[in-house]
Each structure stands twice: as structure tokens, then as C-alpha cells.
Image (cartoon, rainbow, N blue to C red; front, side, top):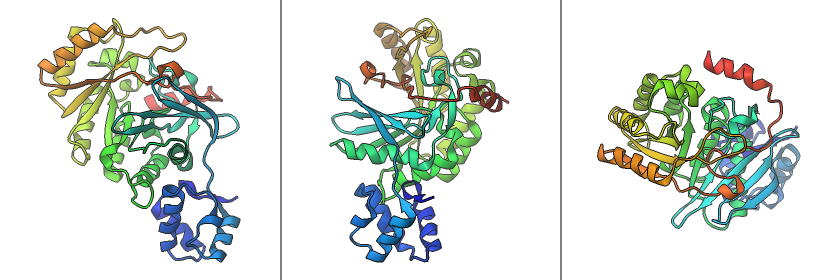
Length: 354
């Protein structure tokens, strides 16, 4: 089987070249060709010796996921359905804005966490994505969009911190000056609060962190985010403060989906203000994006405004996310893809909660 060099970070690629009897600097050359030039054909890597190009063609490949769907929203948001194997496809979303272009990347085929308000979680879970399948989403998007991708958010399908063995090498490629050269402040990993993995990410590859909070107390969060039953708020907030010791930003982003009559009352806003007093943070309020057969409804615009006002009066930094791509089911919480073998979720969810 050929080695898929798309998923090798600098250290892994240098080791691979050493195993082939080649000099380590060849890894830097090939990184630049693959990730900066978007080249998949070793024969066109013109600064490599012909013998090395032939050797690479025989033993290696650059193989991203296969694009099986490409849709564009009225607001310019673009969503790709990417086949990662015969049974599973994941989704990636590009969001263009005036001063930046953000790519939302998936890390798993499905999601084991089953958060109550998320379409992805209702699809079940099949497997973790490989590093090549994660980075391949960025590699492909660079080919398809004209504007520069300046930010990457790991907020697509899956819980990134349950796949750190593949996510960390992908992050290192995103940050590597010989690959994509993004700053740590412009790469964000989102988590529902897998605490041991938060500590590992802090130690091995700290990037910007977003925590899917969605409730200000354990009783409500147990219902909305089942992972809270294993890692309750007190422990989660302590982990956030540990992460801030090495974070590239001086705050944690708390994501908070606004669910009508569930978590959007004045009392919940005041409870959140108390949380903000314990962790340097900013809040990103997310209007709920509906999906078929959901029990939840989006909070009204005035309710969201009032909720934000209570937080702001308490000195909390608050933004309200503009809904993008909801006409093509590309908005936050709507990504579904195609996920097989859903029966595995119940077993894995027990492991997560244990």
C-alpha cells in the first residue's frame, strides 16, 4: 500500500524520507509542494531529482477525500460532501467574509456525544478521521475557493478531542510555515469538554479553544450535553483555566446555542455571568439552527438581544453569531454527512460517560 503523504506532518515526513534513505530536507520540499502548491503529482515537483520523483510515484501518493457534493448558499457559504470510505462521507464548510475566509473542518464520521440540539449527533458514529482526511478538507478547499483561507475551525462533524492522535498532526500541518502557515490564534478547536484531552492539547499543540457550553448549570447541561455527566461544570472550568496558561489567546470562547424556553432566560444569563467571573472568556451566542424532527426552536431576536444585554451589563464580552449557510444545511449544528454503522455509538457513548 502506498503512503498517503497528505497526512504526514513535518516530523513524520522526515522520518519517512529517512526510512527511504533520503535526506531530511526533502521533507520540507515535499511539504511545500503538497500543501502550499496543492500538488498531487510527484512528477511535477520540479526541484526534486527525477530518480526521487519516480521513487515517490511508486511508493507514495497524495490522496484527499473524494468530493461527491458541492453546494453554495445565497450568502456565499459553500459546503462540500466528502467521501472518506465506501460507507461514510463528511462535510466541510467555507464561510467567506469581508476580511477573512473561514473553513469549518470535520474530525469524525459522525459523533458519539449525541448533544440534544445537534443534527450531527443524530447521525450516529462510525470512526475517527485520519490526519490525511482532516487535512485533506483544507487541501481541497484551497483548490476550490478563490479567496484565501485565513482561519480554520474544527467545529464540523465530530468531537475533535476524541481523535487527538490524528487531530494534533493535522493542527501541526496547519501551523507549519512549510505547509499552511496559519497562526495559532487563527486555528480553533471546539470541544464539548473532554477534560483529559484538553490538557493534552494544551501541552502538545495549544491553539485557540472554543468550549460548547450551552447551559449555565449541571442540571440543564446534563440534558443538553450528555458528556457533562462525566465532566461537570466545576471540573470543566478548572480545565479551561489550565488551558489558558498556554493558550495563544487570553480567553476561552464559550459557545452557547440559544434554545427558546430552554436556556435563554434572564436567570440563565445571570448564571453565565457568574461563570465568566471564574474564567477569562467571551461568549458567542448561536441562534439555534433547526433540523428535521428536532424538539427545539430558535430563540427570538429580541430574547437573544436581551440575553446578550444582561451579560454585557455584567462586563462580559458577547457576540451573536450571524447564521450562515442555513439554506443548504451548512450552519452550526446542521452538518450531517453520510454515516454508517450507527450501532457503535451506544457502546462508545458508555465509554465516554464511564
